[in-house]
Length: 88
Image 1 (cartoon, helix red, strand yellow):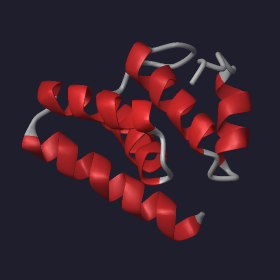
Image 2 (spheres, rainbow, N blue to C red):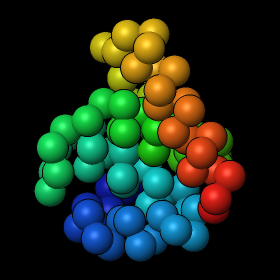
Image 3 (tube, one colour):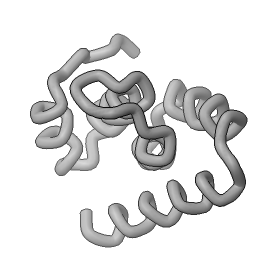
Image 4 (spheres, rainbow, N blue to C red):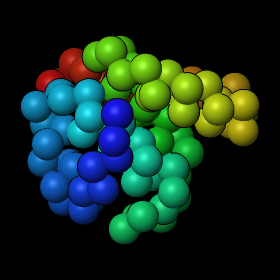
């Protein structure tokens, strides 16, 4: 899968549809701090959502991030993903 390199606004808008590529792109944005402050918890949330919708690269990125995060951070990211899923 090619990176789309969307702006934050474009990725956020596209993610509202639940498209795995857009969710993955938001994960990249937050993991790298492109257009936003880097936030591993939020990045993990987006990678988790993308992985749940079939994105294989998101599974890899999520696993890599989880190794750098505390158990509490991973739990918070999973909570955020569940909350997002309930409203989208």
